[in-house]
Image (cartoon, rainbow, N blue to C red; front, side, top):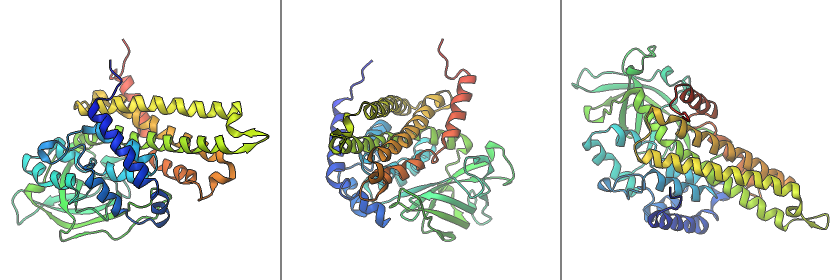
Length: 389
């Protein structure tokens, strides 16, 4: 068992760490305050060839896999959860294409993401169907004018990167919208400029400002046969399962950034003829979070390795969900400690701790809440998918 990263991954980690320190750290607070999309950082990612980390080389990517993307997101999110999300969006919408798309679809849609010429978003959640995926009401009906084509109608909400996306992966009912049968769900690719597609509302968020989330409305949008992925409910779950370590990477990166900042602060803040860091009680709290960060890292790297082996089917769900659950909860705990260690200063915008605190909450909600992850882990143990003899 080797816990060392290979030379290629160590090199990637070093490159992204330097980019994060030089380009992202100075911009993180400005992005949060303005809420404007950081196009300059997107272009930096493109120049550094970070937008195709998880995309195979034959489709224009670097083939670094989910583990490579996990490492990059961890480094970036030490300073900005927004920029971690930007990298995450190179995998979330491309996942269904890579898992179940045709060769033609892969060649049509993946190279543009890897090069930065195009962006995409993943449309699953709806106003009345978040965690309850089978409750979606967005549907397709056969297009009477095109054999094998469909007309897509419905509303998706809380779609990350929707305003910048050039195309969308959309999940919709293929039969009765009231049906909860898993086989009655399909996956489709929709271009952002197609007639009938609109983005009427941008959300106002507590944190992770700088990449918009928005409503995407489909009004009888024509879906050609070449835009049909299919896949059904199983594709949704496999796509999300493979994403667990990538979301977890945002959690461990945020926790690392928050704890490093707070620790540096208490080392330099005098109190009672010593520094705050000299108090044993403070050291114990730092130690607890440091230990949990390292535990989350091991879970996350293992989950990324599993996903890169194609092990994101049902029997591997507990290990994948553990990474997402634990890392996101550690991010919340550590960012809370960071605010507390700085005291009143930690609550002020002159320090990034309050930004870490706001941004961490998102991670326990997106792509399966902490409660959903616990349910998946628990069912996996009951089903003996995770067992110890």
